[in-house]
Amino acid sequence: MSLNSFNTMIFHSPPKVSVIIPNYNHDRYLPKRISSILNQTYQNFEIIYLDDASTDDSNQVFAEFSSDPRIRGIYNEVNTGNPFKQWNKGIREARGEYVWIAESDDYADPQFLEILINALDQNPTAGFAYCQSWEVDESDRVLSNYQWLTAEFGDRWQHNFTNNGVDECTNYMVFRNTVPNASAVLIRRSTYLTVGGAPEDMRLCGDWLFWSKLLLSSDVVFVADTLNYFRRANPKGARGQAEKGGRYIEERFKVVQYICQNVEMSQAQKVAALYRFVNHWVEFSLKHKVPFERHQNIYAIANSLDPNLKFQLVHRVPLIAIKHISRQAGFTDPIKSLLQKPKLSSTPN
Image (cartoon, rainbow, N blue to C red; front, side, top):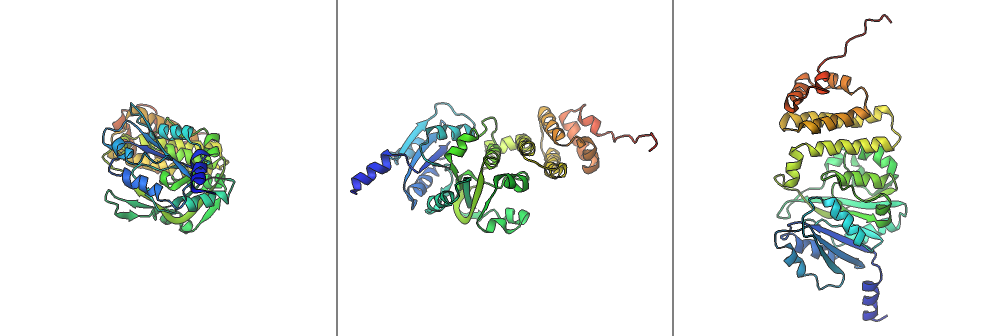
C-alpha cells in the first residue's frame, strides 16, 4: 500500500479515536496540549477543537495546528458556562469508536492512546478505561499523583485492575469521585450515547455523575501507568467561586442520591455514604456563606436517603454547628426542628 493510499484510508474512513479538546481561555497551554496529542505513538485519530467563546488568543494558537487534515475547529459565539455541554457537543461531532476528552490545559504521555486503546480492545464490556495522573502546577511542576486514593482505599490504584461497574459504584464511587480527571479517560462512544451523555444541569460534579452512569451500564478498566498530566484548577477562578457558594456540596449530594437510588444497597451502606457528605456540608457551612435555598435542597436530598436524618444530625453533629447553619441561612424550618431533640415516649413498653 502506498503512503498516499494509507493517508487516504486514515483521513477519510472513521478514525479509531475522536479527541475532543474543550477550550476556554487556555491559550498558554494549548500548544503543549495539542502537541502531546499529535505526538502520540498511536495515530489513527481525529481532533475536534471546541472553543467556548474564548477572549484570549486561543483561536490564533489553534490556527497554527489547523492545517493537519485530522483537525477541525468549532467555535461558540457565546460562552456556555458549562463544560459538560461542550463534552456532549463534541460527542455529537465525533466519528471514532473511542472518545478522549482532552482538557485544554492538560497534556499526555506519548503512549496514552496506545495503552488505553489496548485496554478497551481487550475488555469489550468496559465502557471506559483510565490511567493514573500526575497533578502539575502552571509551570508543569509535578505536585502529586493522587496518592490520596491509596491513603483512603489502600493500594488498589497502584496496580492495573478491571471491575464490574455496579460494584465500582457501590464500594468506591459512592464515597468519592475516583476518576479525578477527564483527560485520563478513554470512553467507548457507544456507551457514552447509551447513558445519554454528561448531565448539562451540573457545573462541578457532572463528570462524577457521568462516570457513575457509565459504571451502571458497563465495566471499567484502570491502568496504573501515569500517562496523564492534570493541571490543578485555580481556586480563584469560576470553579472556586461556585464551590464557595455551596454548589459543589449540593451536587455531591445529588451524585450520592443517584447512586443510592440505582444500585442495591443496604440502609447501613447508604447511611455510611451519606454522612461522609453531611459532615462536609456542616464543616463547609462553618467557613462559607451558603444560600438559604441551597441548604433546603441539600437537606431534602439527605432526608430522602435517611428518614432518620433529623435524629442523626442532633446526635452526630455538634449543636453549635447546627445553630450556625440555621442562623446563616435564616432557617425556621426544617433546621429549627433539628435543634429540638426528639422527645422520649411516655408510653410504657
